[in-house]
Structure formats: C-alpha cells, structure tokens
Length: 187
Image 1: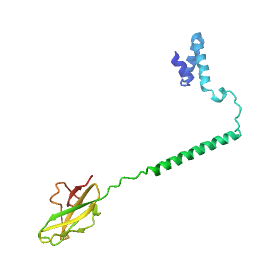
Image 2: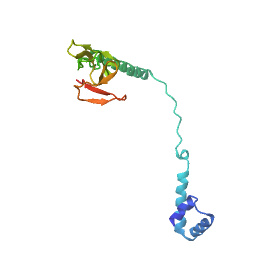
Image 3: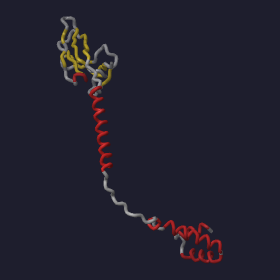
Image 4: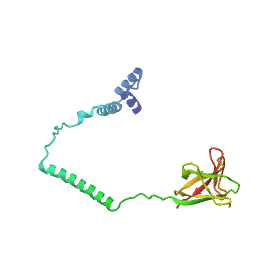
C-alpha cells in the first residue's frame, strides 16, 4: 500500500484511483496515519528554505582602523620585497637558454665529369650553394655551418640532376620524387 501513498503524494493517480485510495485510507487507521505522516514530510520538503531560516541582522561594512591599514601595507611591502629578491637572484644567476652553435661540416662528392656541382638542404633553407672543384681530382667540396639536428640535403649536378650523397646510408624520398640524404648532427 505504501507505493499508492507515494503515487498519491506525487499526484500520479487517476481520479478513480484517488477515490479508491481515499476509501482505503478511511477504512485502515494505520494507512491513514502513514499517509498523514508522509504528507507532512512532503509539505516540509516542498516548503521554501527562506521560511526555515532564522532572521539575521544585516551586516554593515566596518570602517578600517589604522591597524588594518598598516597590516595591508605590510602585505604590500612584503610582496615588493619578495619581488626584489627574485629579481636579484635572476640577475645573480641568469637563466640563459642553451643555444647550440652550428658546427662546420665538410661536404665532399666525387663527380669527375661534372662541370658544376651544388648542394641544397634544410641547413641552407633549400637555397642552392655551389661547391668548389678540387683541382683535376674529380672531387667537389664545401664547408658549411650546420646547426645541431637532423637535416635533409642533396647535390645538384649541372643545375638539373639531383642526387643523394653516396656515402650516406640514411636516405628518404621527398615530395617531389627525389631522394635526400639524412645528416644527423646531434651533439
């Protein structure tokens, strides 16, 4: 019968069901007492909270005393002192980022029948840089500053034919159908 009480309180019964419920309540004293107790609980649950709170006096802002003003200045001055200490430590022990310097690297390729050889790569921002021919030996070389890291590069013969460095085993295809050598200068 308790589910019927809950349905009655929540107004989930039809009119015919409410009539049957009211008749059952009048016949059973226990059911009537349970229903009245639950209805009183429901009434308390649905009551506004404001009605339940005791009245309180309105709080008015108080005026600051001299002590309050001095205390706020103490916090300001201690904050300034802390900031000065941090600045002093930063100037005493400067935090400098570790800049890795570029290192000279010699690129050499053997092409005895070439009239002109150049190099291009990520360390030159893909600009074409000509190599020097070493006499009649067939060797071409250049020394470039290469920053630490992994770089891609290739040689260019006669301004047309691109080819990777034959002494570098690490290679990869680029987006233009060519092959680049991979140079790793990590320290």
